[in-house]
Image (cartoon, rainbow, N blue to C red; front, side, top):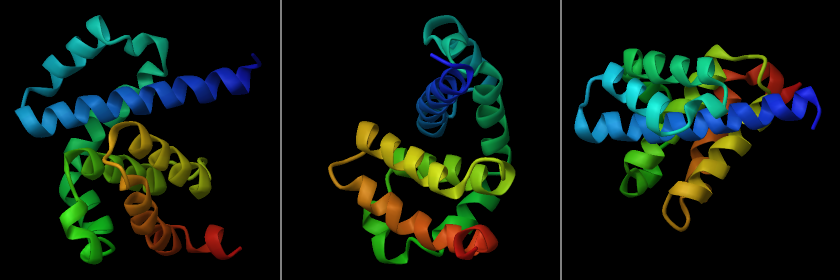
Length: 146
């Protein structure tokens, strides 16, 4: 496996663990440091991009209102679909769209859809795609149209 493939695999692992940790944080209101320790010691975070996991774990809760306000305007037709898993997938994707311009928007969408297929309800990947498409057009206008 080359370095780029290894990097991509580690990033996927970090997103996966971050989704689980953010879900736990949202439902339990547990302290982020306790969740961090739990995931580092018992959930194999070190097998992935641990630095990226920590970034998502701490920065998303710190910006949760802003992130939610960005994607929520595109949820209107799907309000009944929004559950804690989908909420946190959308938070991760919105964060990446805004803070990680080096990640192409198509990759952000694809990773979010893959998380939804793995952890979400039956058709949640369609819902995630339906929210992220217009959000990408808004947040990455030049990349989407260019």
